Length: 274
Image (cartoon, rainbow, N blue to C red; front, side):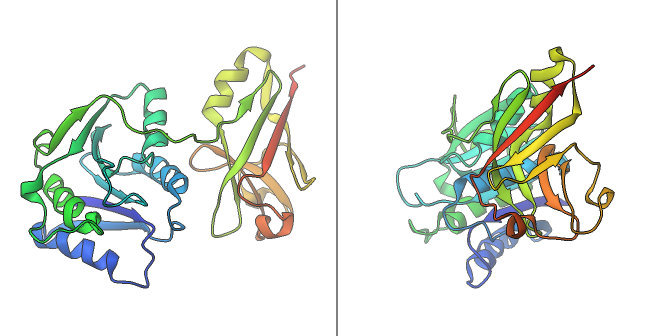
């Protein structure tokens, strides 16, 4: 079985997603295509970057990930094939893979970068406005069948990087921001717990001994293991399933209740251990 994940900003009201899948199935009828989401807001490359960096590690070796948030379609921007951690990633070289690569580098995982130039595998009637269907999909299908990725492009040394918002870490505090709001209204910050552990390990600070402050004057004391550890309607801060500090309300919508939005500042203050 060949697993392909598909992430895009295409939405589900048009035929675009189905057309891409049709091209893949015509080459590999046994492919298993997992629709991660097609509701990325149009042209939101940063959210696409966050999405792929949060999901790839839960898929088996050999998975091919197609990520298409591509406002530069048809221009001279490159199409990438990345092989890393025994998986493959295909999409535009516009920064959508920059957070993924950053995380892998921190974990000392090597990555090969190639620019796609395998025109012999493109659809014969390919155009410049739908490269996901006409160029990427045929290549993704062939990768899922085991084709050597090195036959499909030219090796490069680096890819385009986004200026992804990074938290500012001090000895007893971290200044971060909200980078994602999920369907439940939970507020995901850019504060990755593994980074905090490394930066504050020398100070004797305990992770649970903290205060989370939002720009909307919401103050939350301590971390809990899950939303169910506070009463219904109460706010809390947790380490979410992807390793980021997240703010939510048990059975409520934190974004609405707190008036929070993307980019809002989140201040996490630690007290030194006794």
